[in-house]
Amino acid sequence: MDWVKIIHILCVMGWMTSIFAVPRALIYWKREWAQLGAFGPLGDLTIRLYRFSAGLGVIALITGLWMAWWIWSFAPWTHLKITLVALLAAHYVYTGMMVMRAKRGEFRESDLFLRIFNEVSVIGVIAILWVVVVKPF
Image (tube, rainbow, N blue to C red; front, side, top):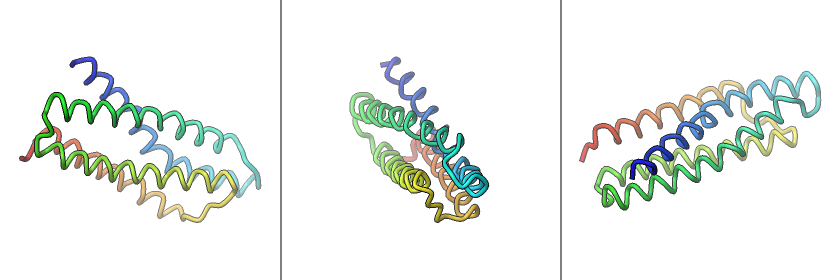
């Protein structure tokens, strides 16, 4: 059981790195694109970071569901956590859509939108941590 928790925490840490870093990287990639007029190193880095962390996110989701089932028997608080994680995963998928558009040179979102979008994920993670620590019901 402890190994599943360790793997879960490790993968969550890696996934969160991307959730926090990729929207910010898109800001700098957008500036690089405007300067170069072409695909540059920041774009490559952003895509690689997103793809790598996608695998970590999948492992985190699988191990989290495993723990919810086997350790906590889907206690009521786990339903809230799963809902919040699903919202964070939707945020991540939308980030991926922005990355794929950026790869084609389409930067629709403003710097301000990307900054706010980035902070929304922080609030989501704080909410998830609160549920896990407090177990409100």
